[in-house]
Image 1 (spheres, one colour):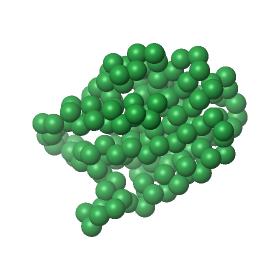
Image 2 (cartoon, one colour):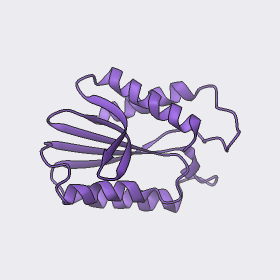
Image 3 (spheres, one colour):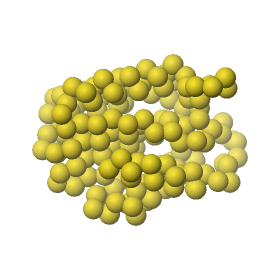
Length: 155
């Protein structure tokens, strides 16, 4: 990701921290070798937020998280919530979403169904990420806030 994606990630963390102060929020939290973009946790709950900016294989990191759950890496939490946030990069001009997003959602939902205490939710971040050197949309911060509101409603 680039500087803009990092700023979006950090703002999302800050907005979630403000909305749910009962969780400790951080960025680039490592589960084994896998960095998770934003994590909120306390003794009972683990919330992982993966921001899919322009990733060629958006199912990969989320699949690894579920693999780690099956291996007992996140043992001790009563509830695990995985939110995969997709930018407009995964939207099709003709309507609907790309097969990359469809496959990632399928993997997430199928994996979460294997565990009683795990939930998966895809979240749309309605912003088309600019290409390298492109301008940031003026409303990006409010869009991050709306995305944080949606994630908070899932908690």
